[in-house]
Image (cartoon, rainbow, N blue to C red):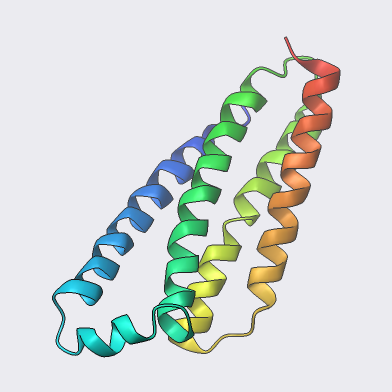
Length: 135
């Protein structure tokens, strides 16, 4: 089994989604009715949170893409260890989605915290595996 396949595929799809979301943010800033109000809240409120989601969505997508390529090189690591790192990386995508959930749906920030912890654990775990099993 090639662990990391889903990380690569989901990462690219999520990156495309957050790129599209970036276009929406540009529209809201430059063209939408009431753009002055949106610009005035640049560093606070929903505008700030929306930009955080956009930036973290792109970053976490790139991290999952990098994770996919690292996991593919770890032939000596067990499938379970690589699958754990891959699953944690995918769970990390809860962070930017959680920010959007807070902004648009009023959801609890628990998804942000779980996603951040999962992504951090994934990167640490993949780093340890790389030091032990890089081929």
